[in-house]
Image (cartoon, rainbow, N blue to C red; front, side, top):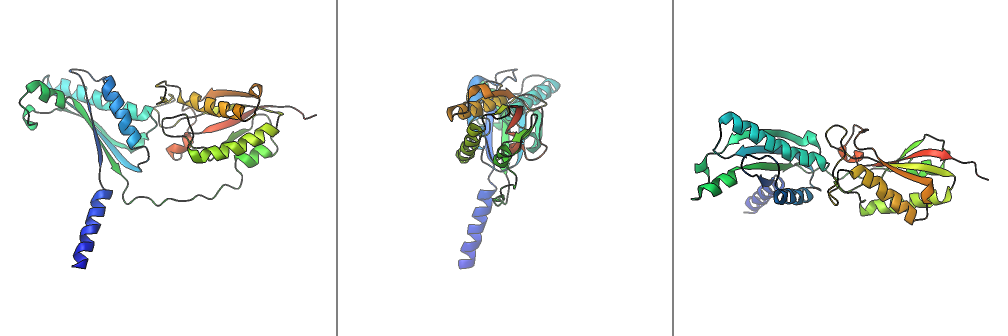
Length: 279
């Protein structure tokens, strides 16, 4: 009996771990622009999957039964592409989007409903399926780098030096840091308060957007997330005692991806612009 119970428990755990996360976005007739209410629902879904280790995302667009086959295929593809753009604008890795396909129309007899208009409304949609990584990756505790930002800021600097503020991690789609990162920024603040002869520009970056576009700040809904991240660090340092006239901030959008894990592009760097001789 015990082996059977153990087997059933393992099966349950496997099915739970493999559980896909699904969401549907509905559209107006002949439209591929996401309605405002549906956009808000989609952002809530993105917040839900922020901390999920994603294996793949599949996006399928559909239409109702009206219109020619060719028209419906184009419209359904445009709807799928609109959803993909929202994922990209909110810093979700495009390489995980294995399928972004328009499937055309859904036949009206698929849904059990008498109201034809309601059936067609339910068919004008995009289906999103998020598949988590299984088995889940073991959390790896990285050894701190031998030469980190704090060490570099304490050492010899010259004009033109660029320092990656490692261990400063931003929430996906937002301009504020994780709680763990604030302690790191406090230590950096203390160093910069002391080194009064260093003037610098804070450069913010984003990940995952198409081309060199900036991402959208989910808090303000503006497409200026890299700038907002730099401004966040600027304001924090000023609050901690770094003089404002020593600092500038700039949004670098996605001009300089690092080529590694996407989350590493959600970063801030310090560019040393001027060093005065200490008296």
